[in-house]
Amino acid sequence: MKIGKYDEMERLAASAGSGAVLAAAGPDLYQAKRLQKSVTDRFRSELGYDVLRLYAGELAGGDLKRLLMESPLFASGQLVIISEAHRLGKQSMSELLEAVEDGILDSAVFLTSVSVPRQSAVLRKLEKLVPMYICYEPFERDMSLWTSRLASEENIVLKRDAAGLLSQYAGRNLRRLAGAVTSLALYHGSGAVVDGEGVREVLWGKGNVDVFHLGDLIFSGRRGEALDSAAGLMNMGEEPVAIIAYLYGQWQNVVAAAEVVRRGGGSREVTAATGARYPLLDKLVRYAGTYPLDCAVTAAEAFAEADHSIKTGGDSMVVFADLIFTLTRGSQ
Image 1 (cartoon, rainbow, N blue to C red):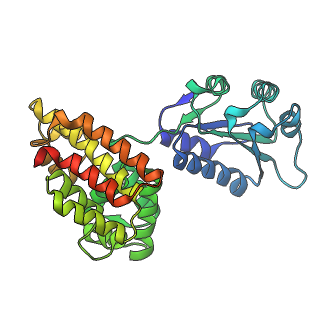
Image 2 (cartoon, rainbow, N blue to C red; image 1 turned 45 degrees about the vertical axis):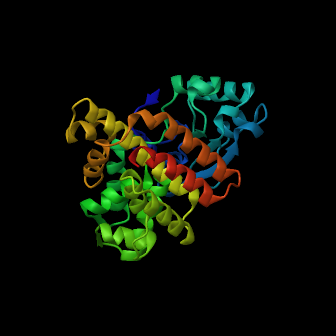
Image 3 (cartoon, one colour; image 1 turned 90 degrees about the vertical axis):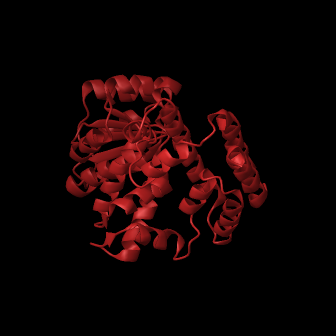
C-alpha cells in the first residue's frame, strides 16, 4: 500500500518488528538512504537483528525462501535488505509474495529501488501488498520543513534569512541541503544560532562572490557583472553543474512568479505557486514584474544545452556566457 508522507514511512521504519516488509522506491536516493538507516537502526541496535544485504538481480530461485526460513544462530532475527528490487526474478518474486502472505518469522525485509511502480511490474505488485514510499524530490514548499528538520538533527538554529538562503542554495536537492547543514554545524558548532552571513561564510567564504549574488545579477538583467561573478565562482572551485542546478531552480521560480503576477496575483499567490518565503519571495516578486515570459522556451532550451555541454566536456566559461546571454536577453 502506498504511503503518501515521508514522516509516516519513517515512523513505520523506526517502529517495525519481526515479519515487517517495507519498500522505498524512486529516484531520490537521499530519502531512501534515510529510511534504510532508520530501519537498520531499529533492527540492529534496538532488536539485536543481523543485517543481510542482497542485490535482487543476483538472487537465484530458492535463495530468498531459504533465507527467510532460516533463523540466525547468534541473533534474535535478521533484517534482509534487498536493493534494486525491480530486478527480482519471477521465482524470487513468487517466494517473497508467498512469505508476505504466509507471514515471516524471525526476519524482516526492506526493499529499495530507483525505479517507480509505473516502470516495473514487480514494484506494482509490491505496492499492493506492502507499505511503499515513493522517493521523489520534495516540492519547493516542503523544503523549509526539511531545512528545519535537518538543522534540528544537527542541533543548530537557523535564522529566517539563513533558512531562506539554504533553501535557495539546495533547490529541491536534499543531499545538497543536508551537506550544507552539516557544514554549518561543523563550522559554527553544536547549539549555534546561524544567520544569513553565517551561511555565506561557510559555503563561499567571506567574499562577495556567491551563487546567490550570481542569481540576483542575472535576473536583474546585469549581464556583465553576472559574467564576472560566474568566472569568480568557478575560480573559487564551485562546480559548474551545481551552479546550473541552482540557477535552473531559481529560473523556474521566476517564471512561475511572473505567470502569477501577470494574472494579477501578489506575494501570497507567488508563495502558493513556488513555496518561496522571505528573502527569496521579495526577490521573486521583483523579478516577476519584468521577466519576459515569451523568452521562457528559449531559456529552457538554453539550460538543457548548458547542462549537456558541461557534462560532455564543454568549456565552462563559454557555456555560462551563452546561458547568461540568453537569460538576460530580454533585459538588455
